[in-house]
Image (tube, rainbow, N blue to C red; front, side):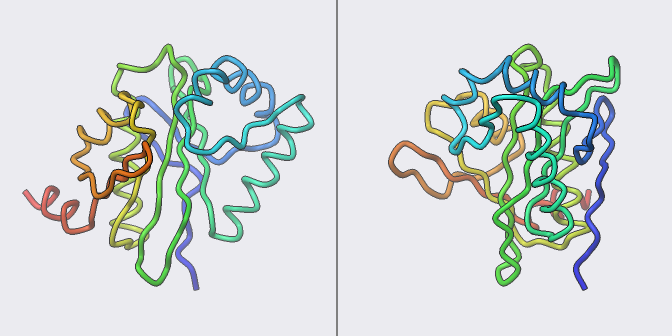
Length: 181
């Protein structure tokens, strides 16, 4: 039986939670406000929202991923004020090697406030302590300085450079060694 993945994770400044119907307008606005910038830094683009109905379909897909235990997308909600500011994604789940891939983005006006660092630490706790994965992988476009900085601050190691992309990894051994002090 698969481990139940929480639909909500709390950090000091944020709540990561599964999208629900009623979030459509905020999701639509977040993507619209960051669309050009995100197309330049995300490896894949699956936010082709033309209208609110497209966002409703997206929420249905996101919720199905949680139920099927194959992809977990969390909206990153700032507690004060209660505002959607980004997204955290856990995907490419490999149960044989016990690895998972992660990705995230944050509204440009919140970059540099170390919110993704806080979110990343909370997700690592989930990934290693609760879900018992062996490794978490993150891939970024080589020119994406913000993501590379963030992953370096979280002590990920670069394991591969190819065709303009960087692949980072963080292992359960690193996690438990750094949290055993």
